[in-house]
Image 1 (tube, helix red, strand yellow):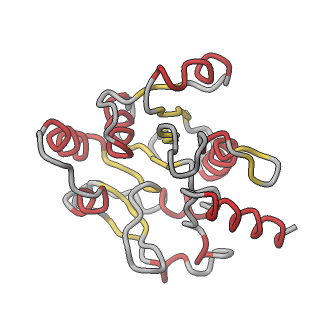
Image 2 (image 1 turned 45 degrees about the vertical axis):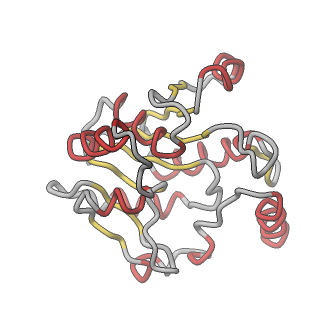
Image 3 (image 1 turned 45 degrees about the horizontal axis):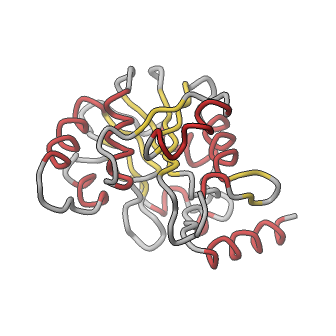
Length: 209
């Protein structure tokens, strides 16, 4: 496999949760620590970089974390801005992008996705058990994806959802039935956006102990 870079999107101020979700604790580790561990397990040796919404919001964390940080070049554009930053700073032909608010994405799933990288596709993206594409846990062909994402961000109108943008990239789709053998496959994309989501995740962690 070619050398890969991985980018973890830690976003902005997480208004629905009421605090910076990247630094919320779940089972003795922050969401950002879960993401680092899962990516490192799935992509050993990959260069890892955090993508934050702005240097103003995360200046202290960037200095003290010990992990390289970059910041959105298009601020206040949500996850799409984070994806663009990853593509813009990438030094490898393919990059892996993971949002930090998916703490149950497993190293096994990341490894499985990496094995599907094939020239000629613009992305490798998993399909959730509800049949929706999950673009915030996916590999991107930088040369194919960057101009499309950049072009959308440069337009004055509202950007389409990321899953629609990924569909423009002629992606290789890893169907749910291809990875439903993985442990707790149906919960891999449990997303933490609200206090209720966090409570549900903490209950799951307690059950697993």
